Length: 302
Image 1 (cartoon, helix red, strand yellow):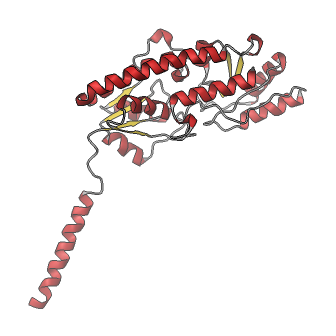
Image 2: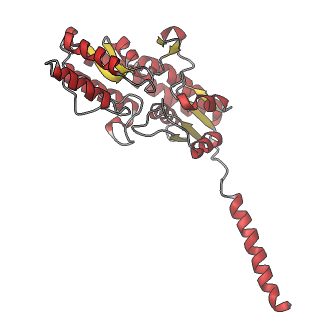
């Protein structure tokens, strides 16, 4: 009997260790951690943070927020974050109900004046970041949300936000100057989906999208033919694919234009629309994303 006692003790100790390990399977969330849905929103939080708090983007390069389905791991990240920042205006279509149910979640578009929002079929167009002056309102919302969540860093957040606000104001004027180089008769921007209307309004381009405001609205033959007619009629020189939208629809338009005797070019680079590029790349920041798009558009239409 006594010879078996050590074995029993070993088994009991092993069981206790296993229970302790189970208790640590989901460690306590960091006290200073922000989760943002898209790269554009994460960029705002990172610039306001200045490295003071951890910021993570839920959706990476090439991910379409209109269609994104949150996984169980995503839900845990959102629920455990000290602050959740999302675009709002139903950009994150499949996540809207979840995001609105989180007590620590804030929509960065909440401070944009309602009269500056574009509306499509009674729904606000969510692609506000294409007007840099509107995205400055989102910066203010992020600044306020982060000060509320982490008041001990309030002074640093205010300084960082002020510096970024000046950078965005300069970027807004830079975009105006660059796009002014496109001749008036060529200022037609045709893209894979209707994400650039704020861009067109702010910087003086007519925007035509193959798909609707949401990529959930698939382009049928009628939409393809509508775009083809416009391109052939106005001899539009170039149309654009997008990094987060499959190129099939644009390729169909090019083929039909060719059948009508009009060669329309498609630039080798893609526009960043609903997602930025990888961190560390030129399109991996919001200003870099904007500059990439502007250069691509000016070079193709000028």
